[in-house]
Image (cartoon, rainbow, N blue to C red; front, side):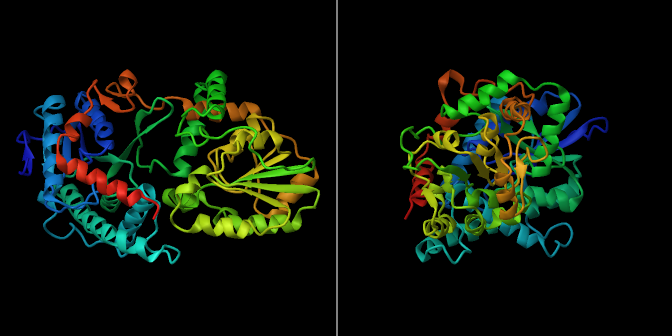
Length: 485
C-alpha cells in the first residue's frame, strides 16, 4: 500500500459522514482496538470510512525504540494481512504521501511545544522517565535522549501528513487511539488546528469495552466528570456492580484498571500503637503529569510540602501513616525518591514504601481518617465507612464522597470536628460507573478463551506479529529500556 489510496475512485457520498481513522502500528496492542473501531464504522451505512496508515518512510513510531526498516516492513505485513481478512476493499491512504511538504497552513507557535509534550507523555507512560528533569541520571538521559529525538521527528512527520490530508480531503471527522502518545498527539493537534471534529478511541471498564469520544480527550477530567454525570442521570447505576468494584479491588482483582494490591498481605503493617491514625495515600506523580495539568491542585503539586505542613499543624495525639502508591516503585523521574527522602525525616510519621507488602486495606481499616490526592483509595475509604479527605482532583470531587480541601489547616479542622464518613450511595454510583461498559462495539472482545488479549471478530494477530525476528528485537530493546538502571 505505497500509493495515496486504494479503492478510492468513487465520488464522495454527500449523504454519508466521512470519517478518517488513523490505524496505529500493527505491532502494538492498540492495533486490534482501533481495527475493531474500523470494522464497526465500515458496517455503518451512514459512514464513508477512510483508513489512514503509515508506510514507514519516516521511521521512529512507538512500536519500537529500535529504528530499522525491518520493523516497518513487518508492521506493513501484519497490517495488510489483517485488513485483507477483516476489511477487504476498504479505502486506505498513507499519511506518508501527504507529509512531504510543510503543513497546509503555518503552525501555531505553540505547536512544537505540544508535540514535545506528547513525546514527554509517551516516555513517562512507557518508561517512567523524564529526560528533561535534572533528577534523571545522566545514563538515562543518554539512553532515552535519542529515543525522544526520534519520536519528535516522527511526531512532526505525522502532524504534517495528517494536517495536509485534512486540508486536501476535508473529512467530517478524524479518529485515533488514546490521544496522548506518539503519534496520536499529532493527530489531536492536527484536528484541533484544522477545526475538524475528532474522536479518541479507547477501552474502559472491567470488560475493556471500546468507546469513542466526541471532540474531547479521553483522559480529560472534565470529560470523565461529564460522562459520570450522564451515567448518574441515566439510571444505569447498579449497587451490585458498585459493590463488585470495591470488593474486587480489595481482593486484588483488576476492575477498571490493573490491581496494585494483589501482592499485598495483611499482618504486615508496622506497629502503630493505640493512638488516632491519619492514613495518607499518595498517587504516582509521573502518572498524573501524563494525563494533564487539570488533575492537579496546589496541594497535589507538592505532596511532600503539604504533608510536612500538615504534620506541623496536627496535634501530637494523631500519628500520620503515609502509604506511597505501589505504582511509584517504577517511577524513574526522581520525584518518588525525593518524596521518600523528605517524608522519612518527619517526626510522628510512619512511611510505607511502594514495594512494601503491607496491606493498604488493612491500613484503611486501622485509620480514623483517610486522606488522598486523587487515588481511588479515597473513594474506597468512603465505601469502607472511613471519613475521606481529598486534597487533589478526582472525578467524584463534586459528589458527596469526600471532603475537598485546599490547605493543611482545612484537614486539621475536619479532624478536630470529627467529620463523619460521607455517602456510601454516591461511592457505589462511582464504583458502578468505573466497572460498567460504556461502549457499544459489536466486534471487540477481551480475554477470549482466557487469553489476556484483544480480539476483533474473534481474531487476534499476536501470532503473526511474533513471526519475525524484527518483532523480537524490538521487544528486547523495549525490555532493556524498562530495566531500572
